[in-house]
Image (cartoon, rainbow, N blue to C red; front, side, top):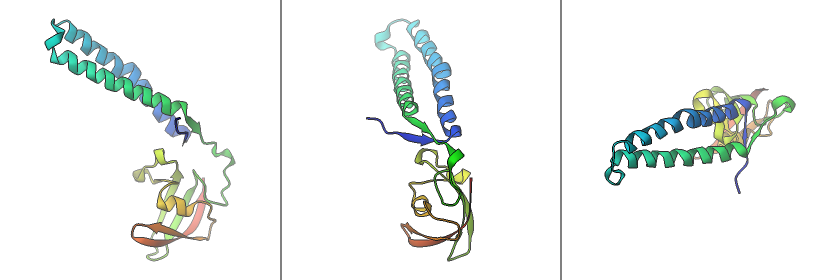
Length: 157
């Protein structure tokens, strides 16, 4: 049974675009490589043909896997998210109580997490620790380096 994954509209579009590119660009390219290698004669000793067929098999496996992910994807409706508490898709401004350093993150599903874009997973230690907290609360975050305390300064969407 496949796992249900939650995506933002942006994240789901990215997956669909990737699938479209595999089907419309990569698949025809590999088919051309196979045809070109086939035209060179004896297939039993044709390394180009074998490599192209292997690449085709790998691509078809990736396409099938991505189609399954998309089929089990659910779109997150952020229209009804309550900004009084931290939930998925909340943009949270937090302050490290120890060193007074402020940070801002958006909580997203595991598969959309990207630290460079300041998107952290709700399954990460910080994400788990912030979920359900309100503005002004201090969250005790259990990290590999011990417990860190973060004060929630603001919650937006």
